[in-house]
Image 1 (cartoon, rainbow, N blue to C red):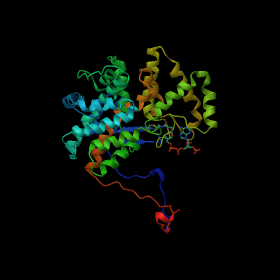
Image 2: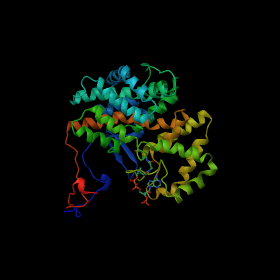
Image 3: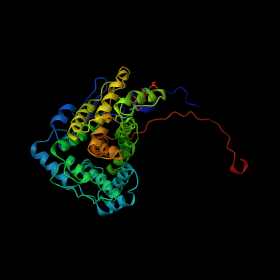
Image 4: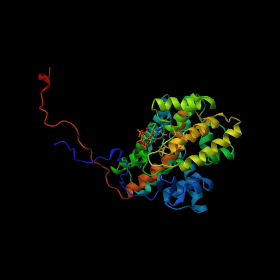
Length: 379
Ligand code: CMC
């Protein structure tokens, strides 16, 4: 019997499968809350380390708690030599493929890999959080023939990441901008990659496996890959004067504009504000306003779409920030991953703490009662 009468919720839209205390995306009014705190307050006043503590431990740290947590993260930045060799062997792959492979390889050097107790998952999750920037940066240095830059324990998570990647210490303004970027990307409700990580965790697989699932899912252009697409678009447009005709061409071919629209937001993505401002400041500082001007014009021209709930999202401005920092486009998703990995850890912990195997149904629409013909008689 074909299951015609079963109602489908394709893409699981509007399906609530679990409850969470980590983040809340209020799509119709464009708000994002992390454990009760508005993302705007956290982006303006907290550091990434402080927000990771908040998300992983459930409350804002005292100064002493933050010092201890931050020191633990700084101690865990190095990766085993063997994993560095794996990166070397796969260096020609896309940075997200290399990151996925390296995080997977880290599991082989983790003695407590299979321990899925809350304490062990938190400890290993902090370690993966600390190691992810090292992997991304080391891979980029290796593939471009530059010497690897060792982690500097005197620098914050964001500043150290930029230092290892670009080979020079960023100024305070730049590291603060990266800090903000990491904060706003950290967690986002039941986004596709965190959901995927939860599915893996729900089988009682370990945190390394679940984080690898998250990273694999983040790579797609409908999720983490949009920032790369936005900067490609800005480069294709090339000049403010071409914006209108470029968008008209896209519209007539019914192509999507990267950096617009969101599965949940029907108003402006609240994360975009911080990166728009960062992009504007950076453009001013670098004396290179071209990309900011092109993207501002695209945003202006896309205003009619807002009536249909297709508004600017976080990736629209993230790409120009990274570009102005001198980061190549194929690394944009990896930066998203550096921010989102602790978000996966938070959701994996929640999943494990009250686990239920995530196993939805799928409606069968295929044929029935086919007669099996043995291979020798099939012609
Ligand atoms: N440009 C033009 N039209 C769009 C866009 C866009 N960026 N996004 C949605 N639409 C249209 C779409 O063509 C469809 O039109 P119609 O009803 O006439 O067929 C309608 O809006 C609904 O589209 P949908 O795919 O059903 O809507 P969704 O809410 O599932 O889409 C999305 C969410 C993110 C997949 C989509 O907006 C998109 O493809 N955007 C571009 C990629 C992008 O910027 N992704 C980054 C998301 S933010 C980072 C993150 O949190 O992951």
